[in-house]
Structure formats: structure tokens, C-alpha cells
Length: 315
Ligand SMILES: [Zn+2]
Image 1: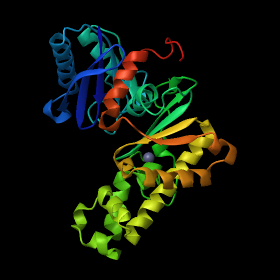
Image 2: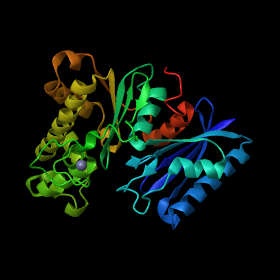
Image 3: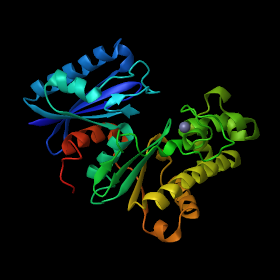
């Protein structure tokens, strides 16, 4: 008896076979571009799932899926990161191919469920997971169950407008948290301001990314330090809204930009306090994710474990 986790991304798809308790047995992945249509992609996912099950002599009992949204009534609804996938019912399609029940959460919520079951959210009732990478995503576990709203689209903290005078966002709004404080934004501001920084000027200007700005900050480059501090302030602004609205026990931060580690978390924590009501802030703890690069897949497996949140007992 085993579970199958399917982590769907805009670029690649990871499939993991796991024990019923969520221990990863083996995983495989492929690039979405290797298949020509969503149907062919899902056929490949099902083939890999069957192969992994057979190889390890395991009967798959449930499938958990994490995917970029948004969704409407279980179908992808014009997903910006999965062009051509509009209208695809992921859970239904994989359930039909593998003849097993399948459960779907958006990628932010799936990662939150993984962090809640296996990472820094363990033993909490109310927590939020925030990923700061190419974009800014989030997921919520409230009262011991994932919270996605009626269609699974809740917790879009990345598209809270933080700076109305800021740059346009992919979602159509202007000055979203994602547009001003993602890894993409950090790299863009680094390129824009490179001429003012001896450190950034020494790099190939077209290639400057978030990693370079973080490295500059770690080396006390003044321009890089200003950029990182500004982004920590924006993130703290977003998290302050979250603290006041939801008052989670824990906020767990992951994603590539959070590889900047505890010193960066300390700056975000400083600004979160600045933007939160004091009592609520002191009831919330911020952590770095402990699940690393496999957060998405572990989240998908966790979605398989809980199955239908409406029917599963609350922990
Ligand atoms: Zn947006």
C-alpha cells in the first residue's frame, strides 16, 4: 500500500511514490516541454506512477496533486504558469488513468500541508507557508485543516497590492507583493541599480539575479543591502497583513530567496513586527522551511495522506 504525490510546475513535474505514512520511496521527474499536450503529460504521469508502484511491489491507494492554479470547480481556470491547460480537471483525469481517488490542492496550499505535517508547522493548528522564489506564493492551514476557500484559490498573499505605484504584476494588478518582493523582483532591481554599485557593476549586468544581490548584501555592498532591506520590508508588510488577519501560530518561509538564511529571516521578522498589531505579532513565530527542494513533492504526498479535507478528521 502506497501513495502517489504529483507536483506539477510550469516547467517540470515530479512524481513520488511514498509509504502510507508519507516516507518518500522513489521519485521521478520530467520537463513539461517533453510532452506535447496536457493529455500526453498526464498519460506520462500515470505511466511513471504505475511503473514506480510495480517496481516496489506497492499498490497505490491515493493520489495527491499540487499544481499552480487558479481553479474553478476543480478545473484549471486560465493558469498563467500552465498555458494551454485551461479547463483541465487534474484530479479527475489522474484518478481515471490510475483508477484511484485523487485529491488536488494549489501548489502553495500543498506546500503548506507538507510543512504542517512534516516540517516546521508540525503540531500547530494554524499556520501559513510562504514561498519566496520566482514568485511569492502561500498556503494556509487553519484550525487543523488546509484552507483553500470554495475553489482552492485562497491565500494569494503574493497578489496583495503593497505599492500601488509599483511595477505591473503578471496577474494584471499593479505593485503586488510578488511584483516588488520576489526573487524575480530582487534580480530586476539589482540590474536597474547595478551602475551605482561597485560590486554589482563587476558582474555581467544582464545576468544579475537575486542570488547576486544576496551575495552583495552578505558582503556589505551598500546598494545590495538597500535592495535586500527594501524587499524584507515589503515581505514584512505582507506578513503583517497576514498576522493581523489570520493570527497564525507559525509562519514558515521557504523558496530559493530564503536560502539567504537566518539573517534575512531576521530582517523580515523585524518588519513583520513593524506592520503587525503587537499582541498578535507576539503570538506568531516565524521559521525557515526545513523541507528544502522537495517541499512541493512532499506537499503533494501530504495532500494524498489527508485526502478530502472536508471528510478527514481534524488533527
Ligand atoms: Zn499580482
